[in-house]
Image (cartoon, rainbow, N blue to C red; front, side, top):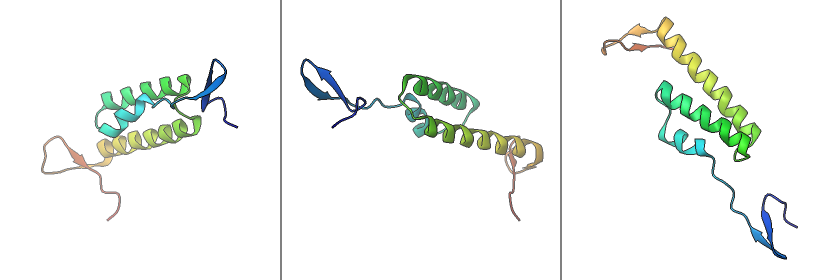
Length: 95
């Protein structure tokens, strides 16, 4: 027997329902390189969770990863050293 998320009833027969693709997926596949990318991803992810297109567990994992990404960027700006590209810092995590 199918669950309600897998089928819809049309008249008296069950019709398969295609699972909705999360909007944040396209953003994440392009890559998150800027603050604007990150903001768009998080905004899309919130909408996906509310609309039921993304499981709470996946959203929680993506959020934790996003927090870690922001922390690395913060550490890079605070503790990174200048390199051959002016205005860019590199953070060595291990020697």
